[in-house]
Length: 578
Image (tube, rainbow, N blue to C red; front, top):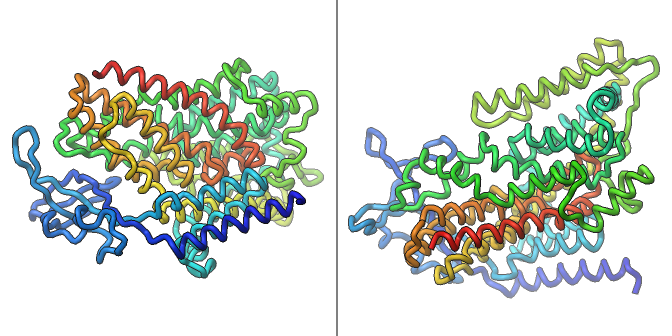
């Protein structure tokens, strides 16, 4: 049977299986219970805070709750409401206290819940065509949920969101436009020549520049990925650094370094999910943020990931996967930055410069917009608590365009560069939108909730950190998001870790909680990094001009070594808590 027919047959079987599962497997309902750090205002109104915003609520006693877990969990009947706040009288240290919870009704389809992500990942691996693979995963999830109007019930609602609009504006217009203008003015090439002449002496120093920028731009996620990728690519290309190498360095210094140099939005987001009633060192928001920073030395995966990219940068890796090794040899010996069968996500419009005749590039055309971009990103973070990347990229694009016009470039030539830039990232933007769509579908089918439901408290304490690591790896890999995984996993993991620590009489329960916290943090980051449906994975490929699946296949072996070493460290330290 021809290969094309086998691929089509695989695609058809996956969709038929999803359709049958959607018709025959009813959802199983469960209640997600999140402890709240509740406070009362001057009028007595109860509220809790999420990312700096106060959310008022009015609880009912658990016995009167419509979402009482004893009645809902395991039911096949949809509950009348999806969210409810309750109060519970609990005995804490011999005292009876009122504890408040937010109850969320969620559902899953058992192992079927993981099918959309499995279909997308399997098709990515087999076809090496990410749009078809991601669309297949989206269709699979839609069939399971019984949404047969794919455009009206799935794609349009997903695309017609603030998040999707933000992606189109930022990555299609602003990022694509800026890269196109830099290509047209020759600014990127001028920067590469400037840095090469003064600092870079070959592939090793070019990669080291990429690593250092990854550490400097420690905001993590998409901000770091885009800034580092677009800045370093012209240098790395000139020095024959393969796109697989560069994508790995960019991706594996983004989120890992953000959890180590966590002077960003991460602590404020995560702390809202780790409140555990009766645990004194998690009692207040400041306590939980302090706990976050206390866990930094135990985020072993992040440490090993950043160390691994550094060793690769200086070409002294402890381990090198076969495909990455072949990519390095290919680039150095032949100058081919991509594999022969690769489909880079940065199109040919962004490869090299297209400077109009008579126009002379200048290094300031790169440095001034880049400096403006960084200054606005950092400045808005300091002022507002999170970087406004739209302002940053918008100002950089306007400055780059203004400088080009001021130097005599015609408006027609400038707009040609802008249009070429949009063309260059168009496919990447489509893939990014589909990745976000399938992530939402995967979360909606309840794969993460099903997995956390499988974890019980009667497990050996020294295995819990590694089990939490494996659990969050699967959730993040299946949904393509580390932050979404935190929201699902932390409300289970932290109370579970406390119950295991106290129930098994550990001598250092706070240290044990720290290990479990770090395992959830790192497992989520690893799963997100290695997932082909993750936005940071896609962006790392777009901004470095790498084939998506080549990036995934070369990153997984390297990242897995770091994850394995982290698991050994957590298990070893866990024995010390007994």
